[in-house]
Length: 198
Image 1 (cartoon, rainbow, N blue to C red):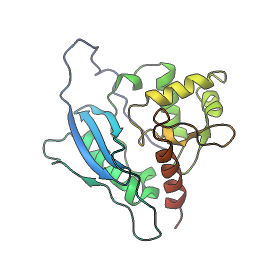
Image 2 (image 1 turned 120 degrees about the vertical axis):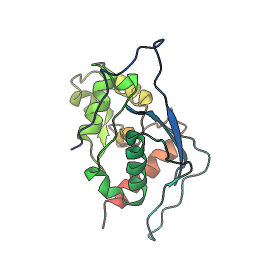
Image 3 (image 1 turned 45 degrees about the vertical axis):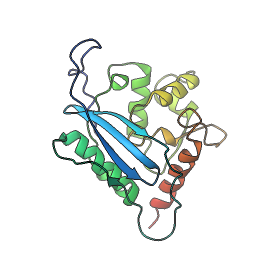
Image 4 (image 1 turned 90 degrees about the vertical axis):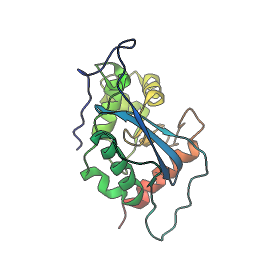
């Protein structure tokens, strides 16, 4: 089980002074991933979809290479990079790695979106999936299936908060990245199924 810092008390309201963010680019099997964050935690993870996902083979592990210097990078951003590197090369180890703190408004307070994302992170572990309906129940509102879909679209830190593990009740994978990343969702689910073996 993960213990994660949601930096609520340190969040600034929009219009107040902004924290200083740094962005790190990683070359991953999914293409370029950009991680942005500050000294308080990770703000966003963006999968740029600039190349087709790498073919999985039974050969060696996949890699995730940092494209930028990690100098003057916050410990939280470094922890995120290390977690992502492990996710692609040794995915079964991620459950024992510390997650970085998060510093994004969608993850603050007691909104339904925040609650859904926290439940997803805490309860839907590596290699498992959950339906939108079941996740709504787990978050305390069984009738909020559509709102769960909205929460997945608002997830600022995909991969770390595994919205790719949320599928339809029929077992279909469902949309990812507003439907533009469905092939990535399938790749991630396969990666986790295969990565857990061995």
